[in-house]
Length: 457
Ligand code: GLN
Image (tube, rainbow, N blue to C red; front, side, top):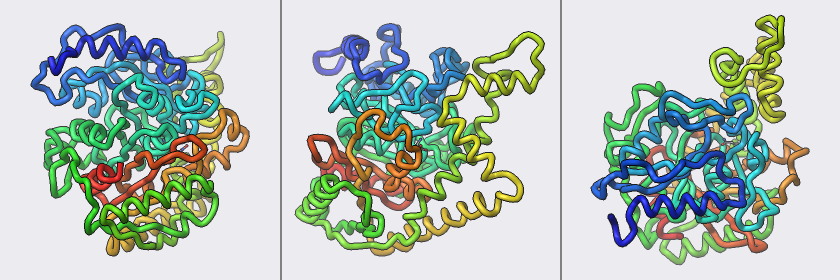
């Protein structure tokens, strides 16, 4: 019991709000308060959390919002969720997302689109749209998403909440249904910077203390928390001495004027708090879009080959079908159009004769982007951009134009390819809709990012 609300009452209150949801943020809700409520000695003591559908939770429907996996109940729980539960959190429900996390608007879901709580005719962003909308609408106090190319940061921006993508490898990927394994990273979404810091600390494990206890042997790319300082709760309210860089070439075109104005106002605010703001150059960042949309589909085409109708999920088979018919029909019926597009793109990019020209080239660009950031962080501590070039757009506005949809990721993709951490925090409104400010830093600079974000929020 903390204050005057006990954990079961808190859970029941959010459960009731989530059940009355009109944004389609949830794909599944827990029945009621869990039988045993964690004691007040745990850090998260009964905090109800909303979890993106692609996290495996033992016995809980987990479909990554694909028809191919509809009804699947995994026999085990993702490490990140297990660690949150170990810290006292309780799973309130699973949240809607783009199918296999492929999208920027949450319109590619087999469970239907999510509506933005600020304006229900608009998208919440994606792919963790349900997680961001649930927090923005007050249906859950906090949520967990995943970010491959922006899927925590961009929906947080479009829904006016806080979203953090950690350094790649910090949070275990074990039990997350894979999209692009070299990019996928789980991250918290909350109403405040401190809330996301608290969740990150627990998702990482060992209370955010650096060391081997945060490494997950079940994820081969897990490196755990290796920062010089433990992951704490930020308290800074000034930015004295903080050097913020603005990559002018990324802002050159395509940013809506209202977003630009809100971004510029955030920079002035940062200066008023003691920061210095200078221009930096990331010469290859503008090629991140092209490189990402080769690398991510290539990895996806490989990861999604496991969905063959035999080992997982649903099977489509007619009397007398052979094995190839079974594969073909299962995948034809199970995958949505964007997923099929990515599998075809990725398979093409990886095929012999094209591999060097597409996949090999994209990996070279990725290395250039890593080097660009390394050079820029010699001069500045943090790099600031808008999180998204636009505010939330009307449902359906971009669904017929995949390239225009991909272009929405222009600000978040360079960070993803570099594997570095970044946060999106609310930075005012444009046309009455939320704008997000993205702050990125070098690997394991989460404490610095969180402090600056806390001072600015
Ligand atoms: N919008 C990007 C994509 O469609 C990023 C998605 C994500 O981060 N999962 O691939």
